[in-house]
Every structure is written in structure tokens, then in C-alpha cells.
Amino acid sequence: MATLKDIERQIGAVKKTQKITKAMNMVAASKLRGAQDKMEAFRPYALKFAEVLGSLAERIEADEEHLPPLLAPRTEVKTVDLIVMTSDRGLCGSFNTNLIAKAEKFLKEKADQGVEVRFICAGKKGRDYFRRKKHNIIDEHIGVVGARFGFNVAVNSGREMIDSFLAEETDEVYMLYSEFVSMAKQAPTVKQLLPIAGVEKVEEDQEAADEVYVAEHICEPSAEELMAEMLPKQVYVQVYRGLLETSTSEHAARMAAMDNATTNCKEMVTSLTLIYNKARQAAITAELMDIVGGAEALKG
Amino acid sequence: MAGSINLEVVTPDQSVVSEEAQMVVAPGAFGEFGVLPGHTTFLTSLSLGMIRYKDQSGSERLVFVNGGFAEVMQDTVTILAESAERRRDIDLERARAAVKRAEERLAEASKKEDVDFRRAHVSLQRAITRLKVAETR
Image (cartoon, rainbow over all chains, first blue to last red; front, side):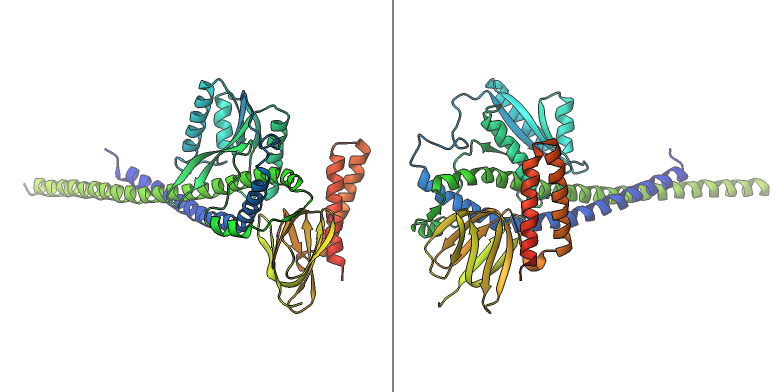
């Protein structure tokens, strides 16, 4: 049985851990707020962008034969790229595990179809994992997810994807990110980036948008040229959104994990204190017995 | 003319301008264009340059814009830019320093005939335009 001193030390250690987890929880909470603000700030741009692109797409779609290269699906798919977004740092519960599991599933599906998958890793955790597994990593972006980053990160990585797609090094590009559903739920999600699959319309304002766009725009340069200019941006917008969602999810996941850890610490301290008190009580009783026994012996 | 235009300039990071204007002038791909209330619907890409608009009080305001798209409808103008800055938000010192830095980089890149040359050139243009917006009275 552990001595009093041992238990005391253990309680001290757990209390220190609790302080750390508590601090991490609060840091994550404040970073989460920042990340959510950033998502909020991005929304007007994303909505408007989707709206304009949607209205352009409607006018061009009639011409199936001459799809812009970024829209045209390949007849034969041999290689696909997957950009996997994970966090750089751990201690965020099952956040990265879930993402990686999803990536493995994707990889298996594609492998069954005889398609080669190349990885682009945004985030250290995912990169380390795929490196250990000796998967084909073509590019990595570290220090982005969960940190401060600008739109230019999405532009640069998006441009690389587009270049390799147009050079026919890859036939499809997917993005795996963590969608921020709520504080308690972050869903790993796979989305197709290239070829751009069906331009999304703004859901909530669908009808309102339709009404507005009855009036055709005068386009300058032509609608086709505008489209060609907007399509790469659509990829950047998607990547940026993925990064924002993943960052927000990371902080939320860490917050929850650290909250759990703090609660567990508290429970542990309670139960250790109980054991400590029992041991102390037992020691005192034993000492008392000794004294009483000694006194009895002297009397005799 | 009666009425006003609702001008919105949004970037991925923030909404830069959101206010009522009497008139808007923006750098379109085929040259500068002006918008008054009641303009026909119009969609264009923008080049690097500055947006000028007259606010409700009639004073002229400037916004630096780095490419993007403009959508003009009856009485709204929406500008989607990768980056944009109001004149009063541009730090003159920093803008000057950026021009200098870009010039140095360009000089360096042109020596090596690097692929970076084009990029350096673009960033110099951007820095100069930004400074120009800041210095215009």
C-alpha cells in the first residue's frame, strides 16, 4: 500500500495537470472565438461569390461540348490528389484520428478501383501519419491550420492543385476537411475540388436569387472569359473555407478534450483525497493502538 | 440624380466598405467605369487600381483594390476583391516601405532572370498603386 507521502505527491501532480488542462481549455476557447469570427467575416464573400458564379454558370451550361477544362470530368481516372487537413498539434481528442480514418477509407475505396492516391498534407499530424505509412505525399503545408493564415495560403495551394490538374498529372482533386457542425460535433468531410462539380447555388436565397438574375448581366469581358477567371477562384474559396472550418473544429475539439481532462482530474483528486484520508486515519489509529498498548504494558 | 447606390466591397477577410454612395467609379478590365443610380446590370472583372466613390455627404472616398469582380445591379454595386483597403486605413510609411522592398526584389530578380521576375513585378505594381491611393488628395 502506498504511503501517505506517495499519495500526497500524486495529488499534487494531478492538481498541476489540472491547471495545465484548464489553461489549455481557456486558450482553445479564445482561439475558437477568433476562428469563428474569421469564418463569419468570410461568409459574405463566399455567398456573393457563389451567387455570381451560379448566375454565370447558368448562362454557359448550355454548351456541353466546350466545357472549360476545370469543369470537364476525365473519362479515365488514374490518379487522384487528396488534400488532407489535420491539426499541427495534438491534445485535441479524437479530432485527427477521425480525419485520418476517413482518409484511409478514401484511400481504400480508390485503391479498390485501381486508382492511385497522392496526398497533400495541411497539418503536421496528418503528414506524420502518412509519412510513417510511406504514402505518396506530394506537398505539405505546416503551420496553417489552427494558426493565423490569410487567403493567400489557399490561393497558393489551390494554384498548385490546378496546375497539376491541367498538366494531367492528376485526374481529380479532393479535399478532406473537418466540418464545424457545432461545438460538440465536427464531421470529417470529403469534397471534390477538381474538376469543379456542379457550381453550388446559395440554398437559402435560391428563389430570391432566381428572381434577381432574370435580368441578364452585361458582361465584360465575355461571360466565358469571366467564368474562366472565376473558376480557379472557386477552388481557392473552397480550400480557404476548408481551412477555416478545420481550424475552428480543431479548437472546438481541443476545448472539449481539455474540458474532459479537467473534469477527470477533479474526479481523480477527489478519489485520491479519499484514499489519503483513509490512510491517514489508519495510521493514526495504529499509532493510538501503540500508545495504548505501551501504557497498558507499563501499568502491568 | 435622385437615389443612391448601395456599395459593398468584400474580401475573404472582412467587409471593407458597406455604405450608400451617390456615385462609384471602379477600374474594370476594359478601363475605368462609372456607376450612377439606375445603372443597368453589369458584371466585370477588375484590374488593380482604385475605387472612387462619393458618399452621402458628397465627399470623395478612395479604396485600393487588388483585382476581383464587380457586380452592378439597379442600385447596388458589389465588389469581390482578394484584397482591398480604404485610403484612411493605408499606412503611408508601410506603403512606402513596401514599394522600396518590391523595387529591391525586382532588381534582384531581374539580375538572375528568375521566374520570380513576374511575381516581383506584380508585387511592385501593387505596392505602387497602393501608395498612389494613399497619396491622392
